Image 1 (cartoon, each protein chain N blue to C red):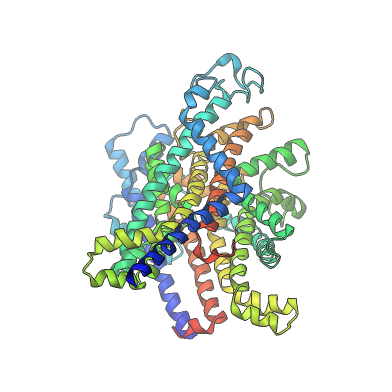
Image 2: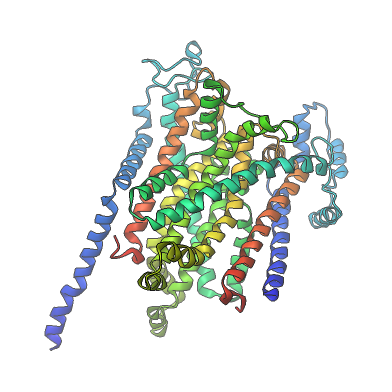
Length: 318
Length: 298
């Protein structure tokens, strides 16, 4: 087991480094120039080559790319994420101010999504073909197709503008005003959780259907075990592996959704910052946020891999 | 004996083929939602092809006298901030969505399948290099990768296609690789190799045809995903450039007038959802009809 964990951790670190390389070099090789962007953004009429060169020098963009990468990696390892090209402010301040907000919104959506989605899928599989299965499956099919930004706008219109139930947008820290914060979060969390709920329900259903058609389930039935024992002890226990994989992938879908939902509901999290800094070509922000995303996803995959070994002893010895 | 044997085997060989197709047709067309999905896709395709005939107005022609008008007989779904007819823009938006969906899926499927097939068939270091690169791409959620690439390249249909294709390639590569890994263990691959078949021959005549059922399902599903992803990019302002009618950017433009003209955002979103839902339903139907493991169950 320990050998498995160590092997996985080393692999995770390699993948993480490769991911930062991909973003770092990808951005610099694609067209788009942060310095020109800054000049156009500030509507500076008089600028000459010298000024641009100076700006490039100031942000170290004139050095060879591998040198830039090693400087950046060295800084990051010392907790320094650089300075924004557009605002000249340290990236780390903004990042750590916004990170809790994104974790708050995304974490809630992740937990709600899987607490509702996985049991719904299991119930469907157990009651296959019954009315409950049809209803949940149809809802899940609709759930994975609704564009989340559009659902956000619909809800905003219905509950915010027409019914005045909920605040239309924005974010308040739960420590400042818990009630307002919760009310503001209801719509974005529902929008963000919808895809995980529907996706988890669909996939948990098919994973459980697969398990429930195995020979040992038939054996369990024919031994005369109670339904509950068959489903929980024999069914769910063996269906856990694909279901845990899903939960791991759920992190990525929450992050992808957060980018959109934070923009729709005006939530000052990392997702909205990523959209604006990617449009402004603000390299240091994009590098830092994508590093966070990569760490989150790699960590989730690592937990999934290790729990495989824990759940299924056969994997430990491979 | 050989004569009677041949006579016996002929009907036996053809019989399963017929029933296989019948089974496909029965399972595929038996579900109301699948048929509904087919009809919806067909309607969108017809709308896209005959857009100039169906659209009541020029989708790019502003009419200042009718800016932000409510739905009426003259403008069935109202008009936007500069007086362009919403219905006409949705009709032309069908072209954008379907075109990008088809191009991205064909590009991504071709590139991804080739990479996955080469990796799975050759194994060894080729497999390691290709699949590890795919792993790295897959670290980032597809929409995030596409967002970054699209923003760096700038707005425009070509750039959206490039960004989404790069985002989608890993899905096909992984799928094809796992398909090939399992297919190549079959005895007929060994047999083909024994009689001296070349690698390209084995790939094109055995590996590709045998993975087609699985791929068709995924391609149909991915058409929906691509349409949705393009809408997200356009919504965030890094997709299709402004004058072109695209559903995602229409939803975004309508947001400012949500209180007075909700139709501006609602209707293009409904179009996105219907098309994506239709692709997913047809994909589901194809999976049930083509999956050999479900044979006999459905």
